[in-house]
Image (cartoon, rainbow, N blue to C red; front, side, top):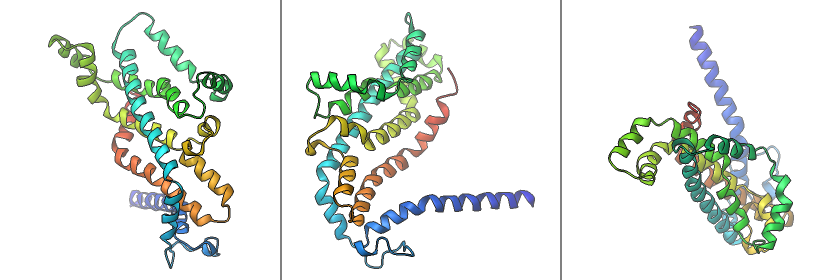
Length: 272
């Protein structure tokens, strides 16, 4: 009986916490459908009596270019990092070469250097090669320096039995064939986790576009929302529309990859 009471109390606590965490999201969606005069009314209402769908028509008129830029950069970053990190992780986990472990330690050590420490040299280099006011600084450095993603992929490859790779070698498979057709499909959970993390990092990036992008046509959705808030500070309903549009892809990506995402986080630390 005591165990049942404890379980019921635990579930009730979890439900209460879930409701508390969801309230800001519900308020955001509700406010996006309200007239401006009713957004800050007290006590707050979470169900709009007269939904203003025209708010979304207006927001999609204002942000299509910014939304397209965010989607494009997210695709570049996710696809690029999955390719580079999986190849690097496979090399560090399954290919023996001189200095492999030392090189991996050096790679991990670079993660301790704060991004702000090399921001100015990075900006000077990008300006010298003509990358300022282009999208290259927002995806090229991230794609070719995936430290955390490489670590996750290495750990995932280490959990695969050596016998599977040996059997492929006996059948005459090349190194790339073993990587692409035998080993990589076994690491779907890690790939999903990396994809979700990378998408979130790219989609929510505000600092990078502010530093490296000058043209309005190249800006991303987070910058557009920040500028929108400054310029139209009194139109909270439209701001909430933009925030809702920005949150929907994040929720969708997480829900689609949730099962693999959780497996990737829990399994990549079992060995190595």
